[in-house]
Amino acid sequence: MKLAHAPSIRTRLIWLVVACIVPASLMVVRMIGSDYELARAAFIRSAMTTAHANAMAIDKEFAVIESTLKVLAISPSLLGEDLKPFYDQARAVCASQDIFNIVLEDGAGQQLINTFKPYGSELPSSSVDHLLTYMQNNDTTAISQVSMGPLSKRYIVAVAVPVTRRPNGFNALSAVVTVERFGTILKQQQYPEHWIATILDNKGTVVARTSDMQRYVGQHAIPEALERLQELPEGTFETKTLDGKPILAVLAKAPNSQWTVAIGIPIEVLNSQLLSKLWTLVLSTILLLGGGLLFAWHIGNRISRSIRDLVAPALALGAGDSIEPATYGLREANEVGQALVKASRMHALARHQATHDPLTGLANRAMFTEFLARQLSLSERNQESMAVLYLDLDNFKFINDTYGHGAGDELLKTAADRLLTELRKSDMAARLGGDEFAVVLVASGEEDAAGVVEKLSQRLAMPYDIEGHELLAAASIGVAIYPQSASTADALIARADDAMYKCKAERKKARAVTID
Image (tube, rainbow, N blue to C red):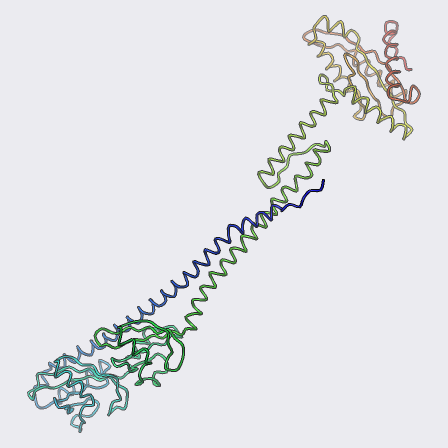
């Protein structure tokens, strides 16, 4: 019967792995997508935190400048008409506090001293009248927007505090710093290479920038950023830089100065970083799937090999050959292999029981007849002689009746052992029944047979120590030679049997062995 094609264990294992991994992979893909969104949100939060930190640093800078000015504003040197001591003190502060210059002006905006100019030089009116107006109305610190300094011709920012100790009424003391000071704040943050960070004043004008600062200082921020700053103090949105690059803009406003830190992250860089992580996860999933399939293939091969290795012992069992214990690399296969070994032993035992005498262990009549027929064929083919001996134990019936069947059985087993010791491995001895035995002497003629009969007669005639009794049971032996006596198995057995009876009848008269 032709067997239908069935899938192999390896194929089933691979499908099992696929069935386990594919749903997990789909879940992983979903998780990867979710992770992408989470990573993007975390990335934006990190950028926002950085912007907040810079915004606080800006307010801190202004607080340091304001504190310096307030200390100067209560200097005793401001009480006199001669401001030279105060001028010297202000220049010393500029040198130590990284301040470009300090200006003292009256309520009308006329500069009284300017550390950028030598003391006593002719000085212009203030270029930031709105600071004076703001301080006169609110009596508090004022911060200017970024502007071009009339004397220095550099972009500057002024911080001014009111002075109340002057005898001539309201005065203003301001410190001017260059925009490079705010550029230093951005440099200290050490932004990633492709990020663009910008500081905007409270009107949305560029004060400092991490890229092309000299080119963009003094320009207004992009309109969309200005609109967002009017709506909320912070936020994120996608837009383009002043030079047209697509970015994700992150805005954070300083609470005191109302200046803004804007971070522009190029969309291309942002996506590449996130996509790099995404592809790492995807490739890891693919590698896990491939590794699982490869591992399943390897395990399937091992299982298949273990099962294939069972084919040979199974065929040997069918052929009746013995099977030796072995390991097959798999517990279940080992169990099957052990079962085959056990079955082989049971089969061998059954065969032995079917072909051997259970008492003596010699071949039985069926096996003896089969062996004899086979040897006859070989002898005929090889043109060799062969001898058949037929043995019968004397006095066995008397011993069996007198001493019991147990003693009789021990006598038969001992006689069988003595019989085997005098034969070659190529010969065969059999118990045909009762106390009758037969022997096939392979490739033996009359002379060889006579020698074996002599040794057997002497050995079997020796006393038997059975259950404390010394018993005698010599053997009567008849011999038939192929081809002289007969040419068939039955005829040879019959001739040897006849010769044995003749020998038994003549033993009382003589101990010679008749050869027929």
